[in-house]
Length: 284
Figure 1 (tube, one colour):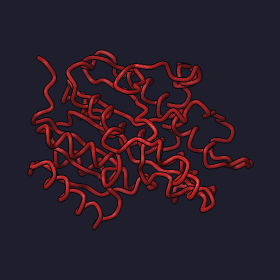
Figure 2 (spheres, one colour; figure 1 turned 30 degrees about the vertical axis):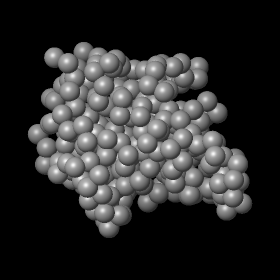
Figure 3 (tube, helix red, strand yellow; figure 1 turned 180 degrees about the vertical axis):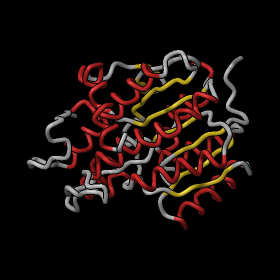
C-alpha cells in the first residue's frame, strides 16, 4: 500500500507556533487527524482553533505538556495512550534555547533536557503504540547547528563551566540526530521509520531566549535571509506525509533530500552510549 496521510493520527510537539503550527495546518489540510501539543493552555487552545479554521478540518485536537518536566512528558504519553488506539506519525519538534545555564526541576540542564531528553522520553513511552500501528513514522527536528555540537558524557550539562547558548544548542541537536538514527536501528524490521531533519534557517521565535544584545542583530542581519515558517515546515511535511520516503529510515534530511550529517552524528558507538545514558537520565 502507498502511504496516505489521510485519516492517520499525527502527534506534533511544539505545535503552538512556528514550524509546529505550520506543519499542523498543512497536515490537517491534507486530511490527517492532528493532535497538537503545547505548554500554555490558552495559547495551545487558540492555536488548535486557528489550525481548524485555516485547514478547514475539524480533526484537530490538543494536549498540554511542559517538556522541561519528565513527569509532564510521562503524563502526556499516558493521555495519548488513553485517547488513541493507534499513532501513525510522531513529530518531535518542541525545543528552545537558553542564554544562561538553567536546570529543570529534574536537575538537568534545560536545553539538553527539553531538546533531547524530551524527544527520547516521549518516543520511548509511545514506541509500543507506534509498532502496533505500523507502518508508522517518527520525525525528529534537528538542525545544521549539530555540526558545532559535541558530546561530553562527563559533563553533559556544562556543570564544569563553558556554557554558551550555541554550545548547548549544538549539543542538543547533535543528540537529536544520534537518537533518531539509533531509534531507526533499534526499530529495524518493525515497520516504524525514524528520520531527522534540518528545516532550514527559519524565522521563528526559537531565538527569543537569546541574549538581549543579540536580538537586534538577529532581527537586522539575519531575518532578511531566513525562510518563512511555511517553507521551513516543508521538510517536516514531506517526512510525515510523502509516499516517497515510505520505508526510508535512519536518514538526515535537508530540503526534502537525504544529506550526510557531521561525522560525529554518524558514530554508531556514540549513539548507542547516548541512548544508554539518556535512558538512565529518564529513569530507564
